[in-house]
Image 1 (cartoon, rainbow, N blue to C red):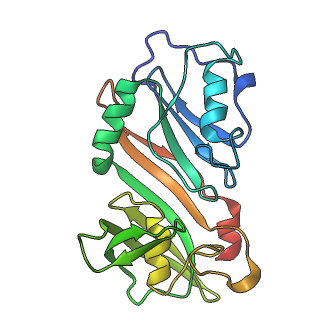
Image 2 (image 1 turned 180 degrees about the vertical axis):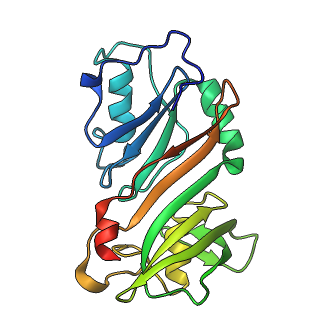
Length: 234
């Protein structure tokens, strides 16, 4: 992909690129990576370092702790979800990307237990979260946030289905909750009811993201190849 906004920009040497993150694109405004499963986007109560955010801050600083260079969180992927993750390099770029986020195209691939009743459709509900940080649907719009997930069955095998998913809204755990509540939980999803088959790895991947560049307004699409694990399942 040609960089639309380089203007003499030179990224840090590849030796600074951290493990667990495959670089898809970088210019002076944004940094896009393919995040490996098992890596947190940002820190949690138990993990402060070795997150995508921490590693990329170290990367843009070229290992110089006192450097003022940094990255900014635009969105997140669950720890065990792999795929396309974008960071901004300024508050201005971050603000633009977050404000325009609902207009961007976010596509995922998932392997689920069972077969959805329809080969394609849109799942709609209102999502809320309990004190145990578990997300679930409610019928009252005043108690939750609107969530819409479009899906299409691509392949079926051995009681499993491979789905193409388009995220029409961006709520926490949205895809996992919608598929689980619909009777087809994501393979390896321990949190939302998929403990069958003894599989531990979550089969959810952020396959592509189409956005508008915060400086040039050019439309860019970034894709992360599907992990081989998915092919082994279906």
